[in-house]
Image 1: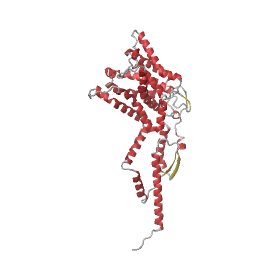
Image 2 (image 1 turned 90 degrees about the horizontal axis):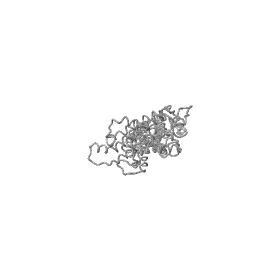
Image 3 (image 1 turned 60 degrees about the horizontal axis):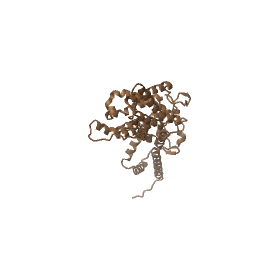
Image 4 (image 1 turned 30 degrees about the horizontal axis):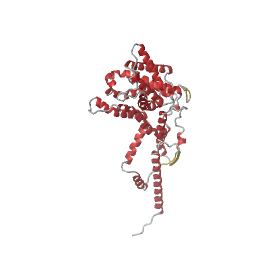
Length: 418
């Protein structure tokens, strides 16, 4: 047999194919690293090498490399996780609402089954109070997926924001007491006996707590509910519409979140769905006041939690009779209507004054949108902070939107309006 010799052109072609394969592998590694990067990418300078057209010689090498990276089933899990995360970022409010209803209703499902006779197993009614943490857990999960650690820190900071001015602390803590006192005065003035103040702090199916019951309501109905409804859902809606419109939408879902109580909670079961319109009016009045307080305290979840807990302590305990509770609800409705008439709906916020789409979420969306364009170039050196700086929403001076009428481009009043 005649000896075979490698032609120089074949050597050059083989060398070119190897270089092409190496460049392709490097491009795939860089692209995977960018897609899998965490939300905090503010200071990264990412080099992307777009993969050239694969030759027949490069394909086997790339196939072997990819098989060494991925285990069976990893690619499917990665694609599903990426699509789910992207969907959540694009539908943050919908995700929050789904999680809130799912978590809360799963918690109270045993109580409903027991009250309706589906199961013959004693269920502790104290489980009802864990239901209040559904909105909080939903807000934490959604913020963690969409904004990462930065979103969680922002939510935590607003949950403990107490430096809002002494007057707002007094309003949050004692205005429910003032409304309770006015309601008692009206009831007594009409000839009814005063309520038994010794029953303040009594909570259904829980041992008598006294004044500790005030703290109990702040930690459950206050922090648990308000971290989600006012702390997460409300600012998301206020970034697109007026505070009043956002409050109406939050109230709609807030009322819906309470519907399972008509199937297991004593007072709700006795009254039935016939009182739902009156209950909805009471929730709407309460929600308007809470929105006003939230905006006035620069987005302090702690203040609205303090207000909500104080309201439950005075109005939902044994120290308030039926007529007193009805009078309290009427006073809140008058308060809410007066605020809407006095402040009026504000203009929809501009994009410059919205902070609640955090930098991490915005950068992630920008990066995913740039990947198809970057794949058309041979080699691109990308400085992410400089590129994203132009399109990133600006924060308002006080950290949350001031819900007032616009005085000029990018300026608003400091009075939170509806």
